[in-house]
Image (cartoon, rainbow, N blue to C red; front, side, top):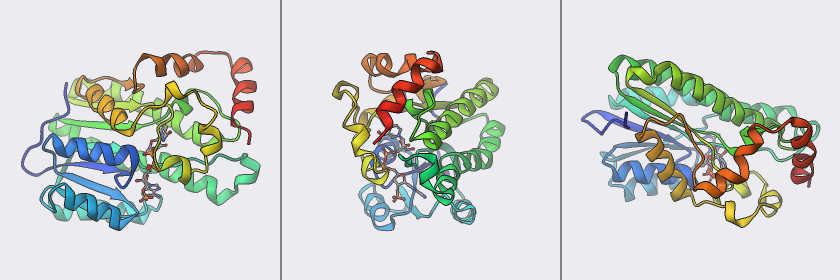
Amino acid sequence: MTIPPPQSGSIALVTGASSGIGEQFARQLSARGHRVALVARRRERLAELAEELGGQERAVPLAVDLSLSEGRDWLASRLDQLGAQVEVLVNCAGYGIYRGFAEAGREQELRQVRLLVETMVDLMARYLPAMVERGRGAIVNVSSTAGFQALPFNAGYAAAKSYVLVLSEAVHEEVADRGVTVTAVMPGPVPSGFQKASDAEYFTARLPKFTFVSPERVARDALQAADSGRISVIPGGPQVKLAFAPNRRLPRAVVLPVTKRLMAR
Ligand SMILES: NC(=O)c1ccc[n+]([C@@H]2O[C@H](COP(=O)([O-])OP(=O)(O)OC[C@H]3O[C@@H](n4cnc5c(N)ncnc54)[C@H](OP(=O)(O)O)[C@@H]3O)[C@@H](O)[C@H]2O)c1
């Protein structure tokens, strides 16, 4: 199975397209000939990127706050108006709260869940059924190595990324023999707008440099994985896998004290 090649009326919907990994997904899908829908909140960034990628016929900027359900309704209605069939969906928009749960605040925690979990579920539920009906489609869900284990002081983010991973794996299994692929992507540290937006510079600085992977490489490895119908991928090569994948299997009594020390400010 591969990512369905672009055809008349099809579009690749990329969330988080104004920066970092999502921007790279948009650029690389556009270079493959897909018309792309660029979604994030920063209107000017999206407009500039759309212009660079060839204007409205090639790239449609759609500025919206995805954590609001009315924002997602608006996005779906704009795509309907365009008459575009979403054949590729990349769920990439995100940030993380790097504070204790007791300090972060109810509204902040809820906003994080709405963006990382509710938005992904909503967009998948809107576009997966038609993909299955047509027997063609690809969904790429950006999780994180944070989803491999519980992370004190980053609890909601790790839990949300774990949700993304586990949901993607199960749905992949449901639809893989029906012409549609769902691929979970688990990047380790990636230099992007994320560290500033998430106030996570202190934590990123503690991670070994050999685990850092560029946004370009993350998008490239993820698209290659989706092209091969893979269920999941840790982008960046064996050293990243070696550094993070074991955490998925280690007993929590071993992992929790280490992650607590690593994540504390
Ligand atoms: N960087 C890392 O180390 C790392 C590691 C593992 C996983 N990830 C995941 O990779 C994904 C992309 O992150 P990145 O590294 O590319 O960070 P980034 O450069 O900060 O990009 C995040 C994107 O999400 C968008 N976004 C944030 N809140 C939004 C909202 N409410 N509505 C719509 N769009 C919103 C941002 O656009 P606007 O601000 O314009 O809305 C931006 O386009 C995230 O899901 C992140 O959790 C990142």
